[in-house]
Image (tube, rainbow, N blue to C red; front, side, top):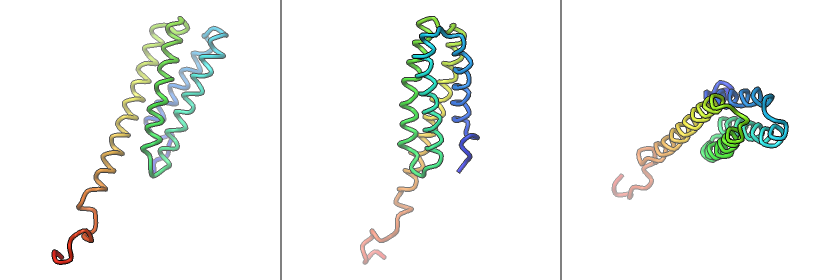
Length: 135
């Protein structure tokens, strides 16, 4: 098991959180305490899902939860941009970070699914399924 804070997807998620925290100082007060706080909470939960997925043997459900967590994060960041709380340049940078996280989570999920399929192949199963006369 890799240490969770060495995982590229965790690092990217933490970088996104750090970037949002730094940007929140420039957000209007009403949006900072509603949209901004919700956004930070969602990103923290994303980091926790990544940590949990890394520590469990059955990673698939937690990776799926992490991927689903990206939906409200993207929505909240878009809302900040549409309400002119983020510049287009800031929005583009955050979108790039979110895209990186999404791609890494997707690749991790595909790897886990492929690994599960490999472990279920008939070659790995015992010969107990064969008829006695075939042994």
